[in-house]
Length: 570
Image 1 (cartoon, rainbow, N blue to C red):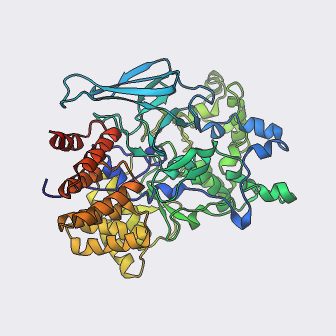
Image 2 (cartoon, helix red, strand yellow):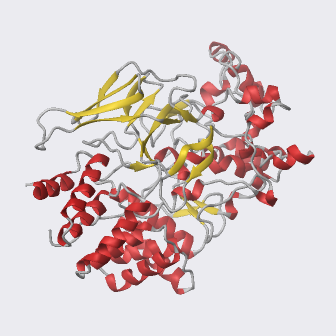
Image 3 (cartoon, rainbow, N blue to C red):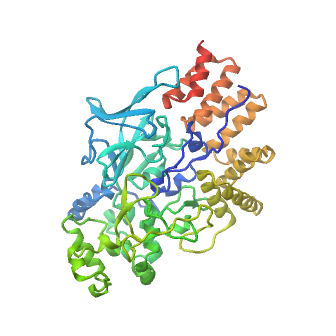
């Protein structure tokens, strides 16, 4: 091995269920995991404005018992937790399935020790050793109304399991974004942004990418204070809580949009790496949501705000229409009440005579407005799930055109942007999709932003990556060094600097930088192989073996680690 292995596009994006799950995942996992979780923290929400503190939803129950009981039955309140502690939406009776390639079979079940999944290679193994394993399923994410994902714990670092439960199928399948892989993908990090819209009181450990105090959240589900603000002052002095319905429209809508507006990418503003959205603030003050121009938004898992914005109802009603117009966040109508409940919402603005369907057709349909105008359709970003179309098409079955892959990225809702934010949008989406046109557009924008004095870690890190991909190390390396000095959590900078040190023959410095990288994000498999190589060259074969065995614990099918380990132990 002449030099360090490097990932082709080392960047991390969150799951497509929130515009965060990638459709293509490289074998090593490093393309997902190497650049700092710059974007996944975009959704991180914290409280504490004016010194007030969170008290937890249970504190609300004594004074608001009826609301609390109703809310605890909603999907928002049940959107995460310990596996086995909430209402069972899934079946754990030893379900089995194979990935789409047929390379691996999975079994999901439970025994005396808890819930688990097994994986085992099928057919003619391409490796000299059988690839089998078992992992515990510790936490779930998702209400189960459409699907549930699961979390595995490795030494306090959390990763998404490659198995998921889909309610429409009433069965288990590969998790979204990994079905096409021919190996068990066990190293997708659970980032704060992944948890924040499903849980409350996230207990992230600073200085690491995806390490948490356990349990990783104080409340499973969305807590009361997410929408109403911290409750300590209210309990102590009776100070009113925030009522979202009484806020100005932009602040009101931001409370919902923090989790239900994904766009193509969300770019944090300078100094807002972990945006704080206290109820009453505007989301646009912390980040810019970019969408593709020239066509309607596709139905995705978290595209509710985009779809609603393109509806005739919203365009005609303006600020008057918002999520709370039709939805009571504290309760969900029962199956028997649903048709009449939403029909009543429609009739606050519309007349029965305005419906183009005949009276007999309406009667045959049970006067179900949403069945025609808000149908449940498959999403474009996650297989096996259907969601309500909030575009409210006038004619049933009307399909919107898919956006061009090279369409301009523009801020959602209009407005101006700057070179830095637009450049980051293009580079993030470009790296996620392998879109070279977007990367070419990002490069001069980020150069201009830096030339104009913008030197935040995210801008410099992405610009360094673009220089490096152009083999311009003379520009890339100083930027990586500046980023690493500015922010010791930017592990992508440390990983890149380690490669430069190894190429220069400075093995001890490379070892130091890669150890620091892995302390922040231990599942970077290519970094582990490079570290093991450097350890071998510096006379530490035992440490090299330990590093490689840990790599194979994270991914038993990662062949570069297995090959190097075989060379050492022969």
